[in-house]
Image (cartoon, rainbow, N blue to C red):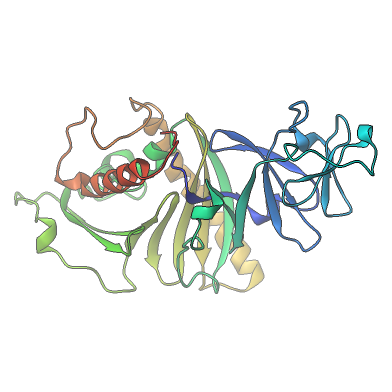
Length: 328
């Protein structure tokens, strides 16, 4: 995982009034909401005796109380009371919890995993989604998040892994693909698969971006992906790292053409299982990949259709090198 990045880690509905303890980015984290409704994120570790604060409780919507000895912490992570010392006693400055900045938008919760002094901007998200309805399913993969992401940037596997679903038609020849960048964190990928007609695949520089409302793949570093199927139909995935070998996919299906509640429910009931079926076709293979973690320089023989994966690895390698004290 790369330090000093905004990561989607949860959905908003997962954090309500009670303390929520989860493992994310190979750390045990604690989430709760203060009296204003703002999401607070701490490392789930009491500085006194190391117990999980998530086993404690929220006092009056503005303090977390440790379950072991009753220490209280405000929403900045500072200990305000050590009951054994008395409520009027000063609290030593080393009684504090590491806190991560949070951001909440479109039903997702992000944390800035790193030094908050280096957080100079809010996280990016995909545009024009607020008018669309969505449903979310979670899917656990026993794979490093880099491998799960790369699978969604791989256009050559579709007619083989998904030959009975989205890969029907046998479009095995890959022109390009074309990759462009929107800023330095958002990658756009245009797919031009076709049946093998005996011609040599076109080079990326021979291709052009599709029209704005045509299908494309978008990826925002470090862990957000979108299949822009059309303006009113999208699939969005947050690839949430749990640890070095586990990723949770927050899989969302967005639509904006059936907004009548009963018809909307029918559409989601139809499409969400289908999207999971496609994901599981991938998961069966991705979980077998070795080594577990991808890297820019590794023992793999790539070909032209792997360009989006190469672009992903280059950017990820750059971010890793620019980040201190990172974990791969």
